[in-house]
Length: 505
Image 1 (cartoon, rainbow, N blue to C red):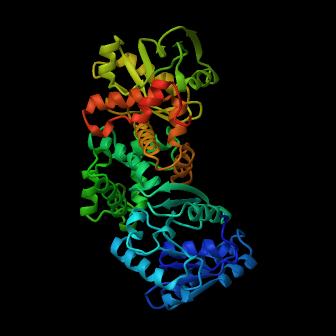
Image 2: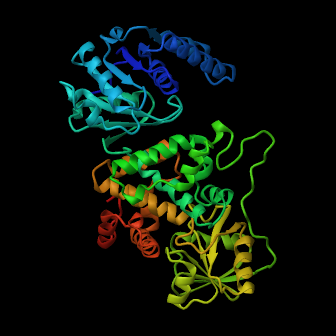
Image 3: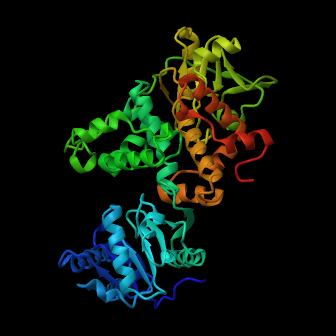
């Protein structure tokens, strides 16, 4: 089945921000769109709001007045749900309540023709459950847009147990014709994005709870070293802690309390206090007028270094070598176990062990552990950790080497896998489990995380670049350090590492 014809009539139920945005997307593609809301006048007000937003784009020269007029001409507010009878696709975007949605879909089944596709924009509820009580559950699917729908590229096409694969392909092709980046996913808790993304928030919250570093520092590390658009604390402030915490709780409950999805007590406390983030004026950060954002912690430079020794292969951090030379640092290369030496200091990329543990087990004095960076050649910041008995002079030499190479250096407490590495390893682990369980393909998982939450690289591709065996070792060391099932490695990751294969094979 191909995409719906551009003349196909589309209906959207729910005139809130998401419903109005979805209606705008369909109208911009040329479809006649009916917008219905059970609140009198809400649909008409939503169309007026779309018109105003498009007007601002016209004023900025980003949209022609003709395109604005054509989009608004395609939108029509209707006062009765019976007016949707002739539509070929109905998309509901109402409250996230299973019983309310079920009742709506029963009503739609009695109103709309048998060829009409019934779609839900739910972000967390089971498509199988929504459709279970219908006479024709095969025509119910998920069509999950991300907010704001006109801007965000990702659309998750969600198939329940009874959903017709041909209809899923139709929605996929239709979303693609609308200029979106669709992905297929099974109806499992959180689908792709809301499941795989949980560790992004959880690991920063865990490090904060343990006092490893403060919010500005951890956020800066994820941005400036990890390449993420935002850190976990600024992002949850933007999303709203009530919303983010509720999604985490929903996924946690849906997976019968799996500790990988355990909610954070720190975030619960913010919700209990009404500190919901930007919308309330206070979250992890204050948004009161005149308040400046606190700055990340960075070490000051006191020493100068001219040379260093690279022993063996640094793996994903090999681009540091050219970076050192670019900053006029003399680099001597020789065989070894993947270490950097400068003066009395030894620097190594973290393998998930604490610095004190690795120093003892590997016989490395004055060991400084380096965190992961998305691109060591261009990152502006890096996290380090060291054992408590580190010689102060050697420590300053190691820091000076990194600073000479143009890196801001943030010291965090001696924590397993530091900040970026543990976050990426856990994202890859969750993505691997989703792949193992047939939730989606590897390419769709990676596309969803890039297009839906703006990750610099899909977690499976990132794990392949680092090496599945190295990611597995990091997770095993995290598991040993904490003794928690939260850090258990995925069976698929173990399998691929043992086979010497990538996660995309």
